[in-house]
Length: 189
Image 1: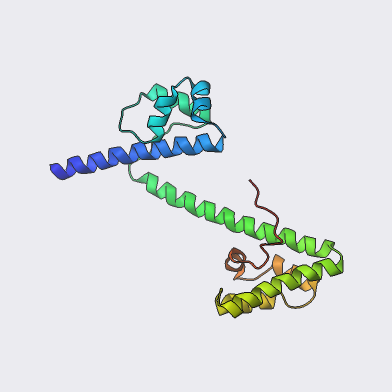
Image 2: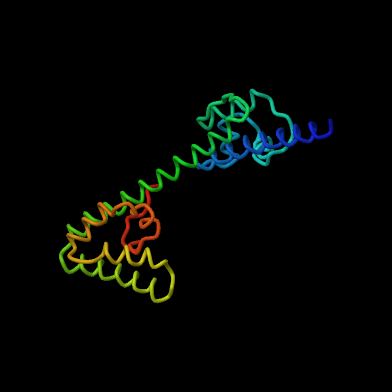
């Protein structure tokens, strides 16, 4: 009997933690302070602070509903055990989006290399090559990355640009640790 009670208490606490974290994250994404959310939702700032802090105080469904409406969130129910599976799926989708973002940033750099005057483009390529040399000299990166980046950076700017567009099967791994960080466009907000 005691173990069931402890398990229930832990599950109960985890639900409050998850709800509080989701509300706080949505509030931050919206650029709202707790006071601004209170004004928008009609829920007191103290109640919002308690909910975000995962207080074990019970909250009315109406309170949660007003907060969700103000933050553009939906209240939903899920079968037990499905939430961890959704978190894994979400993490995978976020990683896929990050990989795509890195590929797009390197593709934009490839276009830039082709648009720049020859001297400026070659200066960028030279700087990337120098970074790879430094990685090898100081042991900052594995020899596999160093050799693959060396191969991608070899040749003319057209060849380097083409390699950035099609880096092969190692592309995602290479773009995660890129010698081009100085030249990549900032990530979209």
